[in-house]
Amino acid sequence: MKRKGAPVPCLEREEEVGQNKEAKRLTEEFVAKSEIGDITGAAAQEEAKVAKRGEFGGSILTDRAFSDLPLSQPTLKALDEMGFKTMTEIQARTIPLLLEGRDVIGAAQTGSGKTLAFLVPAIEMMHFAQCLPRNGTKIIVISPTRELAMQTHAVAKSLLKHHTQTLGLAVGGVPIGKEAQQLVKGVNLLVATPGRLLDHLKKTKNFIYKNLECLIIDEADRMLGLNFKDEMEDIIKRLPMKRHTILFSATQSAEVFEFAKLSFKKKAEENEAAQPKPVYIGVDDQKPKATVSGLKQYCCIMESEEKFLALYTFLKKQRSRKTMVFFSTRQAVKFYSELLGYINMECFHMDGTQKQSARNSNLRGFTQAKSGILLCTDVAARGIDIPSVDWVVQYDAPREPEMYIHRVGRTARGEGGQGKALLFLLTQELAFLSCLKEAKVSVITQKIDITKTLPLQALLEKIVGENYYLSQSAKNAYKTCIEAYNSHQIKSVFNVHTLNLKGVAKSFCFSSPPKVNVNLESRPSISRNRRDRNRSQHGMSFTNPYGNMGANNRQFVR
Image (cartoon, rainbow, N blue to C red; front, side, top):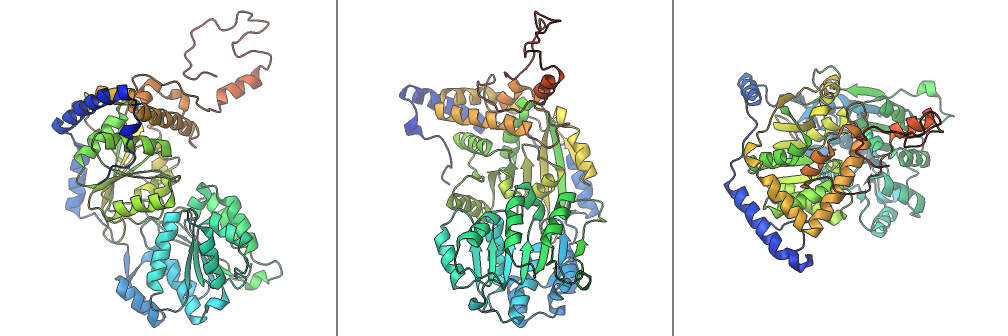
């Protein structure tokens, strides 16, 4: 497999080439000889107990068959060819309501079959209305990411195999002209991302959407998390108000329900008393856990300087498995994919700034691989269905417990699905486990033994120090890592001023913190200015003319 993102040798300065080759040779020798440890102790014992009790892969299927529903023959035939016989709980509880024309707010764990739950009724609606291309767009499905939109489009294409209705896809990263031509010809079911859909609503002439029958919003919580609220409000204002609305999400929150109020708003002149209220279906509300029973979750507590060595140790041991690793920034994804490629641990990588063709290529390659590593940002955390993922590793902690649930939802998917998740936390971040507990998530605390990997640190520092392009990539990753940490939503746990910057630098293969301009919105400085506007930043005032005479232990220079 071709290495992705590795530094280009021909761009290196001539005097560095010999040094880099020697450092790389020493590193490869160490990697080849190293014996890597595994997660051991209580984690292995607990897993054995659970397997003995038969708790892996709790069933999400019901005893209700699709054939029990009043579905058309083309739809039943497509479902049968796709291998779907019986319904999951979210499907069994929502499809009958949607076939009756009710508005629904659905909440279910990732991998529980939400896509079929809204696509089957939508296609039935078009079938019985005998929609033709000249009727324009009858159904719009909005997905937060391109990958999820393309996946939904693929499922819809299979369901429409024996129907005559037309299907379209509108996502960013591809030419908008071809999409516009298809919309003008007539697309009955359109799957789109918010930004591209809004572009078409504003600019594409003869895009017929006045006959819209149903608006489907998938992954609503992620839509808000990606700051699509303004775009969604604009879209909803432009679409016909007299329509059915379906809203699905893996988690529910006050923000999602506020968003739902806007999405389900009807025309003022309609008789509200005659309009049935939206039905809320929460299949997991009474369950003791927010994640599926087939998922085993672990947490490793460590210091900053141990993080990359722990990750390398883990990946080396699990090299025959399929593993996804989540980072907080795209620069970290870029650097670590280059670094791992440099020491002969090939990996795929995926982030929101890649060209669509590159994202598709990496996602397709990892999906088709029997084993491999995918380094990614949260762009891959929602809705994407990748088969047989063994491990989900969260190298950087998620911004909130809901995102944790979505990340680990990439494994243990579907009926009988099994998988494992590993969360890295720094010692000062232990309180995040309480946040997870409140969200009905429990993890087993463990430790990865990096004793045999410690000598690798000096070799990695030598490689990065002598390779200009790898060093610049590491600096960018280090800078954005600190900025992302500073913007964390749970400030009481993730406080940037408690970071050990020397340790953080070591995790990016620097012996000491590099000099970079970090953009921090310092709350302490704001409160200090409010407290005494006449005092300078050095502490000088009328009562203290000599200023601060004590030691200055600040890590960041203002």
